[in-house]
Length: 317
Image (tube, rainbow, N blue to C red):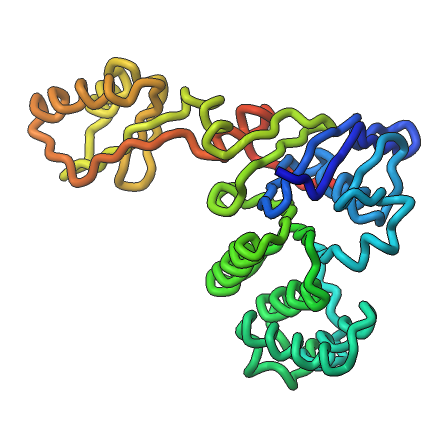
């Protein structure tokens, strides 16, 4: 399959600080590619180099065969960029933001009007087409920002934290738009902290930490790296006393017991082994299961395992 993005030994120093260390990967044409990492890992720096907002200290990157440094003007005509912070013009209306963006890309007046009408419909912005951007909610502004990036029908789109801070409706709409872009052959590069979003959307995921690329694979194959994070989750028809909780934690194959509201999650590398033991446990104590489920490792489990981090701490990238 053809590649839309080729990254070779991309490196960035800020003085003596090595922010990105010889990163190399490829993104296939039409792929939804996720780029994950803790705060300060090098995600934003890598994205800025790919979009020519900062120049690499070493290495190179190609977008559709064009060098991001030497061919930056040509690349801009085929790439859409959605920054994490909104870049709409607050004094302009929704439709004026779109047509102005089209003008910046050299689109003719008729093309601009037609494409703006298409995008206001696609992003459910029709009722807000004549409202100034300053009057729009965060979710509506985010939709407008993404719509602006698509005015010129780019072949590659970079989305930086596309649903960060958005309501459920806007987040779902944006995920649907990303899937539509994929169906139309557009290559989508996403940075996100939302593990479930990456799991739902991305065909492959790259994980970066301390400037080093530590994994590139499909979500399901990455999950195999955290098989010990499999679990059995059970809710009983009554509360357990401390002694029963202790006995539950000592069932065969259980490595950890977590109380989650009215449920217990039993972490185990072999869930069938736990299931065999849990029924005798319930019978001996007169318990009945209200719910009983097994879970494989989540992408968040993989992320924690690969980066060695639990809760991320805010930091600059």
